[in-house]
Amino acid sequence: MDEAGWPRVFHLLFYTCLAMAATIATVQDGPDPLGLGLTALLGAWYTFFIARRPALLERFNPMVWHFLVLVGLNYALVRTNSSYQAMSYGLIAMPYLLLPGRWGYAGAVLFVVSSAAAAGAFEAARDDPAVLAYVLGSTALTLIMGLFTHELVKHSEQNLVVGALEERARLAREIHDTLAQGFSGIIAQLEAAEQGIDDPEAVRRRIAQAKRLARDSLKEARRSVDALRPEPLERAPLHEALKAVAGRWSAATGVPATVSVDGEPRRLPEDVEATLLRAAQEGLANVAKHAGARRAVLTLSYMEEEVTLDVLDDGAGFDPAGTAGGYGLIAMRERAARSGGTVTVESALGEGTALCVSIPCA
Image 1 (cartoon, rainbow, N blue to C red):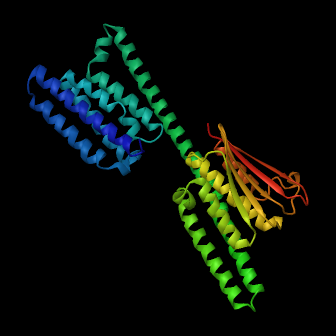
Image 2 (image 1 turned 90 degrees about the vertical axis):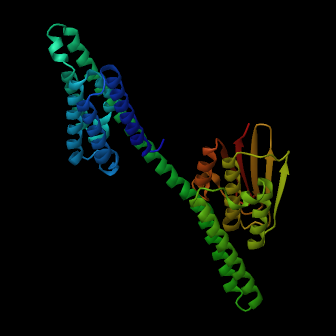
Image 3 (image 1 turned 180 degrees about the vertical axis):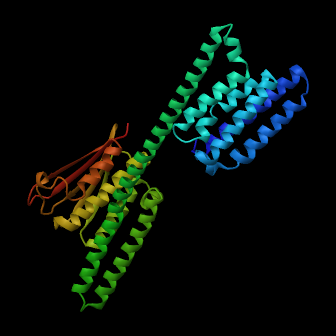
């Protein structure tokens, strides 16, 4: 239930208990103009000054005054007819709904004590001390309920903070996987166009490629903000989407990239497919920026309990121990870990690089 839904639940509880108490009093003792008038006044006051003013909830002023009116009307009704004690179930949560912080506890004690006084509990306690124990127990239970409610609210707020941090991390990864790679490709095309300035046809071709990369990056950025699946996965299954990504990458870099599939392709969870596609994009981007490779090979393997993606190149290679946090590996590993997967890199200077992303999917 969303945050705005809980006040509506408490409003419904209040009206239900008010109607139930009035009905019981009327059935047992017949219509009482004073009781029915106070009931109407209590319902109207609650409707116009509390239910219809949600923006003022938990503001000491004016809610403390409205709460005191509720307490006073409840006292008068219970004094008029003991059947109105049934309203306690609808009013017991009101102090915590209306009053801020610790004032809710003070309001809860005031409500319990005033209700007990209206029902004649303190007069009865002179002859039966157990009545006083009942009042004290009711007060303690009400305070415990308030503590429990505040702990739930605190936990909910903490979840919101954690959710916001996770969303920021997600957006950071998505921006890295889309805008950063797109801008790198655009810069590469424009630099190539600048170097081939004497060849108008090559310049036009490079500029057209840069424009296409810019449009694709803009689409992906919008989809990332909206938390949608990567665009290639909306049009085709994973293995076809990988072939499309590799094809565009080859057209942009001039380096051949092939995609092979081992095993029978099958539908995977959305987060797994998105993780593998992003890993392929990042791996190819690294090949273009760092490897100086003559070719790249992507292998997607469907196994019984897991799926793996290997991105291989025959480029310059690097020392993985010395660049553990580079080449986008941190973001890639974080993304894979969210799906329960791992990322491993094998490389050596002059011997190319093998990137492997493995995710369980059984």
